[in-house]
Image 1 (spheres, helix red, strand yellow):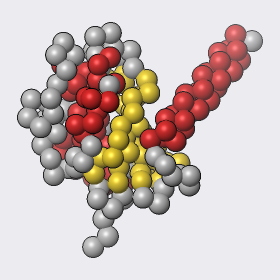
Image 2 (cartoon, helix red, strand yellow; image 1 turned 180 degrees about the vertical axis):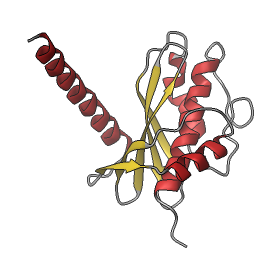
Image 3 (cartoon, rainbow, N blue to C red; image 1 turned 90 degrees about the vertical axis):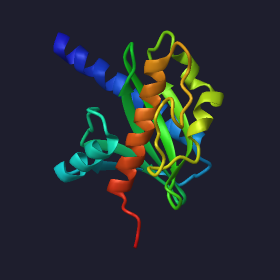
Length: 170
């Protein structure tokens, strides 16, 4: 009975998280026709992304991407100082640049300032052609260096994942 209750609680919690994720995606875009798509990367793709990241940050093989007519929203997660930070990163499909970002789950104590529009707007228009590095083209939040780096890593990885999973037509 105890195992059954744990399973039920896990399912309820998962459903609640999915509802939060879906709502975050709706808030980011003005598109009505977004469709959730499960993306599974190959070992070659993950190795390519890992090399492009230039860090030892792990690359998952499974991602949720919401695809619309003009936008693609990649759901990404990156560890902060106090726990995982979960993002919805809106990418312009044609330009392959960040349109907007929403952080919908975080446990940071001092890094809450990375959720502000003032901080997040500096990622708008960024693509894989940009450096995407705190202290270079990204201004970090004083006292929240780890959180600032977590956002930057997540954005960079989301762009790389999108470009690998949905290559541009040539």
